[in-house]
Length: 381
Image 1 (cartoon, rainbow, N blue to C red):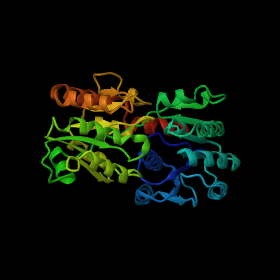
Image 2 (tube, helix red, strand yellow):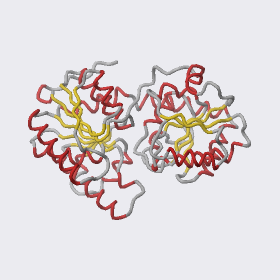
Image 3 (cartoon, rainbow, N blue to C red):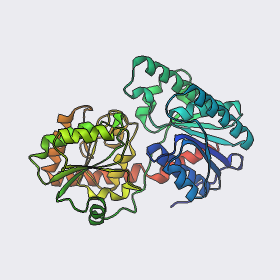
Image 4 (cartoon, rainbow, N blue to C red):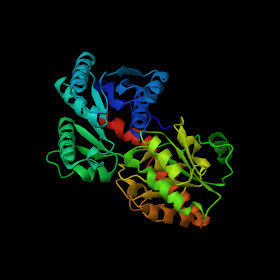
């Protein structure tokens, strides 16, 4: 790896704050930055609410962690107030040069606490906006205002795509604070196709694997992919849909699989550590989200040279800009998803070309090293 820029001495103490310490896109982002900042000479602490894999990985790397009791995704006035004052005390005691906040709840509480504690450099990363999720209009208005206040309180806001920036560029007094830094991933240390298949589903007779790496969450609309696969399954008895991940909708999706009579053809594997290493097991990758700031999973599928069928939402068209790099379909449209999947199943030569083109684009434009370098440079500014 190329030598990272050394952080300036005035900003060597760095605090990252995130709501949940599970292992999703935002958590992977914090892990990559925290470990890189430590390697570059920073004194790093990661504060989080709910315990999870992120905290475990950080501790294995020797990075200090701080549990913020009550910091959860759900709104709870008493818990939120307790978390807020805990953050203020922590920042006043530790006097960090940089506080880098992530996720909606942690960003709002963390930005205000850091301002009141006199932190000289507050950076927020917008991994996506909660107002783009399915929710009542009045909740969206509240979330809009909270997002605006977070950006006002931050010195800089990193948007992970131009789509994320466009969503808030109209807001007063914040456009000049925003900068786009794309997420980045490493394209190494992947298992071979044979090893990945043997580890994931060793006993399946399916020869063609359609893969997904999506949290079982309402925004990801995994149910659209289930319905799309069911629509083409009879014509393709050699195919299976294999889904890596878990989430709050698992029971509902298991029931849908039974209702679709796809119990032997759709496989929910649950959470797998370092799931990206297994993506070469797949022949095609599907992403059916209705809201996506950028999408680590699509970047990782490109690293595995997979052809991708995804929804045309958020920052995804910035990864897949045209039909030479993948196929994009409207969200909430299982029929269009099924048509795109089947077109690539019937044209393996084109599918291979799309995978190769996307792989080259990921390596050239969305590397982990580029993301880290551009972000660490903000810590000294």
